[in-house]
Image (cartoon, rainbow, N blue to C red):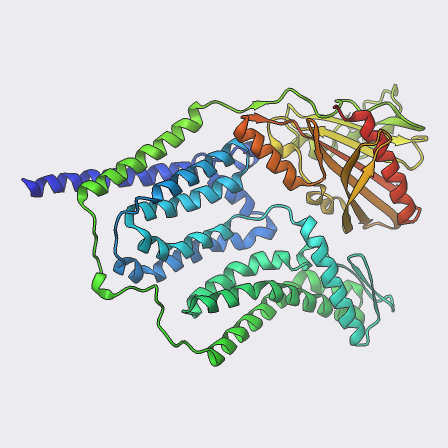
Length: 557
């Protein structure tokens, strides 16, 4: 009788184990994403695929198969380790479910993805114990590389300047006169002008090289400290590779001309980074093996005497699978039955920009909706124009891109402030987001696509006429077609009774309020563009004075 009882229990245990992992697959493949679902889909998996499809994230497609190889490589360890229930892992499971839920509520798919990755690892820990979880830990952590980083411009600007400084120093050392201006390297002979964009900062290369180097370190070394040494070499290797890339492109420009250097950059310079990285990492690995040979076996491998030992009663295993299934069912049901997070009705700024600001007049800004034309029109307040004077297409108060991105509950207000509409002035845009946070994003995401290169970036503290101190992010831009203009772009975010110039801080505030108060703040993104033929110091002074006046006029306290 006991034999058949155990057989029945084993069958039930198998059914519930399949159910628990199917529920896990449902959480990953069918739900979990609330950030711009109209663009990225409703699931964590669809969001990941949409992010992997971006050019800079090509390496993410390699992570799942490499992770599968790392698991397969450990197959003997998985068989040998002693398998006992990991009771305390239930707390990790609850923590991972909380991360998944928090990311869902706060529209932070990266947080939800971290939750589901470690939820799978915690489930294995709960079922098979700590020894099994230790073997699976590195593949689980490795999967984090599949989560694409967010905007990196605020970090890359400093790395780009560092790379430019090193490359300029070396070029002058080689006898090629070069001058650095922001993130540009200009030949004294006039043979080339190099714009060091984000890919040349080293940070993009780091995210692409790090998973490859981590996998190489794991497969080539046995001792943990050696693996870490090789992995941490990724940062200097990425920076060095990009310095060499810039030097090679500069040499091509000096010898062959700027056009040839540009063609070389777009076609071949990426291979330079890869070749330099491979040579550096394999060279470092050879040095470590020569001067620090292995003196002991990997201690994470347990004795073969424990092979296939499973120290768990069938009834306990069944209970574990039932608990897992109930937790996952509760998570799915809780997310779907709890109801949506409410949107705050408190606006951070006035929905309409003022018609006049000091001596500056506010003019309407309209956009042609023809994809090929896209003309921007500056109009008087009472001036009525329905069609584009160039192509005859209907005009609108949003650009084509803004109409695609902004949700129906977002509020956009824009005005051009100048002494007259034909003179230079300040282009002010204010967007109040609704429920979907995709309406707001840092300008670093879109400025390069509009033909601007970010040369410098800094946080500036401004004191308004009402003696209010606040921070704005100030960008110095270079327009591709206007080399003699000073283009300044300033922005900051305003919430209800709070302001910040940091996109990350805004996201943290939003996440906190979404989870704790179950309310989405309506943040405003205020941006000011200013094109001037004055020097940067004078232009910056004019811009900050204007921003101070604007702040007192639109912020609701």
